[in-house]
Length: 296
Image 1 (cartoon, rainbow, N blue to C red):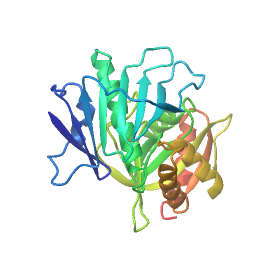
Image 2: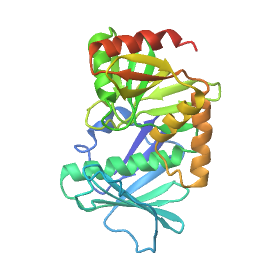
Image 3: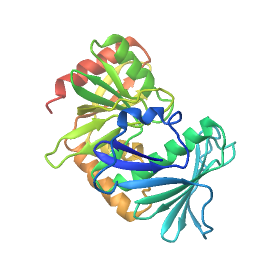
Image 4: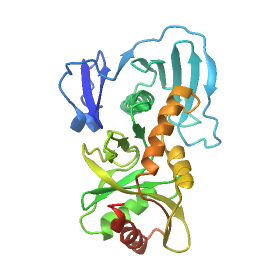
């Protein structure tokens, strides 16, 4: 079976011998009919991968054993990617992604539905990030809340309180709703608009909204003993957004594409740092500070 999806205007496909309807519920809102033109990329689930020599490019030895493990290798005309749910668990996903990012072969060794979901989600997320890196598109690690038609992106390292801050908005800022809680997509259009999009990838929070909104502001969340919002300069904004976007930054072509998009985004979007507690006042202070700059 072949499944077709559209995220932030980009169409991609997943090919499987099995019916995966019960596994792919997070993709339902993004399903589209078979496209007239070739999709941006296609991932095919296979029983095995061809043998290939590979050279390590990026390993997931990050000192956080409970975080997902990802190793990337150079395999001549392909990238070879392997992943495990944590640094303590076995590899359950192997993918051979052609370097033009158009075709990928996915081998899944885990047999549970949870393993299938992990492998498929990460294969599609990585293929999407790699293939769109040259297309003014950023896959971002962020939580996004929409208020009064504007999207507000909350960035920061894992555990800094992005999801908590979004929840404070939902509970205390009238008319707010969550667009995505982990991997939204940011796209810069030729007319200068910076638009946030929902995606099928939302981490531990089941929020799979196929919607879009102009970005009102991007906010870096920092844990602090007080609630205070401050605007930050472009160089700091660039560094924050760069560290939050997905893609193989060691590859020159991908890196160039990401850099161009990030520069366009941070020079046309208000960017702040929010020092905050996990409380209602933090949401109110942040909202009052960023909502008035939507026409920046």
